[in-house]
Length: 386
Figure 1 (spheres, rainbow, N blue to C red):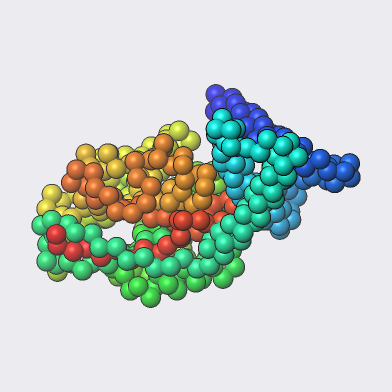
Figure 2: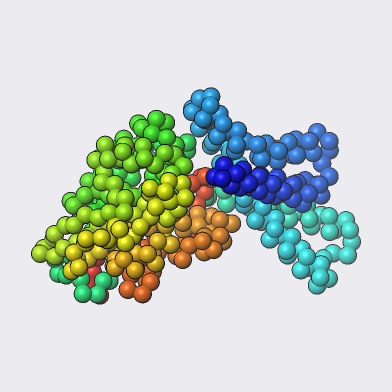
């Protein structure tokens, strides 16, 4: 059944991808009336854009990871550029139709063709510029973002407690090297009481990425460093990753909690598995109620949950603050348009009844190395009395 659903998903995704590329060819290449060699080259580039992503996965899995990583860079850059070109082309066509309805287009066919050519060149130029800006934003070290959570009736002993949150680092084909060490150094400089790693740490197996996640063993928190799974851990072997993360010295929270005392006040740090984990591994079904089971009634309760949509379960289980990621803040257009269709919150601090929910924009990126309007972050969260 799972394989059948996967095949259906892959078929639909492939059809949409081919259709979108064909649309760009129709709207950008055909009107350009290129000479045969250049026309063939342009259509071949579109075909390559469709084929390179699955090819990079196969090469990385079957042939050599290093070759696959190199192809991943090319495929993800192509995916990002294609997404931007597609959005700009759709926007251009909507404007063109409105102009046509309003009789605002030039009456002379030659002038219309010249206008269309200029707009097409503008689309390619704008997409290139945005991709470059987004690349710089995505690949620089995440900035530290300060967030104060105003909790009513916060015990004096917990006032000023600091939490450093990183999430969605996505160590994998395109995120390796010095980036991980820079993140670890920045987190340790915060000198946090708690370090929270809220899922999607990796994109690959333990065998592929063992040496690349090793720097995370240097993370330090006065009360501990805690990890919960994200959906990408379940694409990469969640059980193996949970065991390896424990070996690095992080505490993995799978629908469970730990109790601490600070300044005479008690604190509960709980964690749940990814919201969709149960559909892949039934034994990992996300359960906020189980994570709170046996927790002291007078304690402040903090829940680490990868997806913001765990918030209702967290509220019902009596948690006061939930820390999440998953959304990347939308990362860049058009993906930012789809996040609100799946998640109740996209980024920042929100409230669901008495539960505060903070959603990080993520510390790395997934897929295209592009961030536009959604900067990456390492979050320094401070608890304060309301």
